[in-house]
Image (cartoon, rainbow, N blue to C red; front, side, top):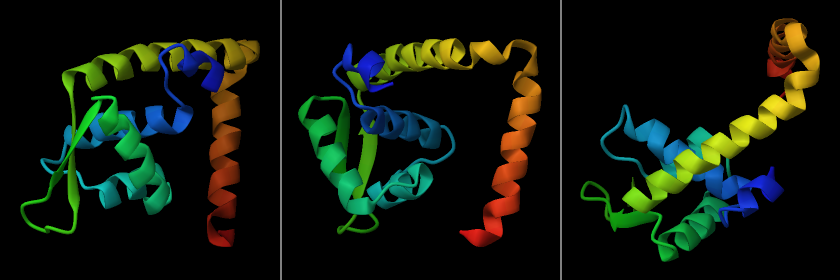
Length: 124
């Protein structure tokens, strides 16, 4: 995955966070770093560090939250949106290639994965 995303100068974590901002912004007006970290299931400090790098590249904007001055609100820039769309196409192609071997059994495979996740929910 990283090799494919490297074509765009992104790591997998950077892609996940960019995609998370786009996803969350469809339903929420304000997205904080803490909300994004919870959504992406990433460590808040690591998330902050990665977001600083994305901000330096001009892919996102981090602004002081008007409701909580300790928090940062996140917005994707037009360049960030475009690179995320391109990255999504790369990730989709990699996924199709990797899971393509399952052919007509993909539905069964997904059902088994859901069963495994559900069976282990109480263990985590």
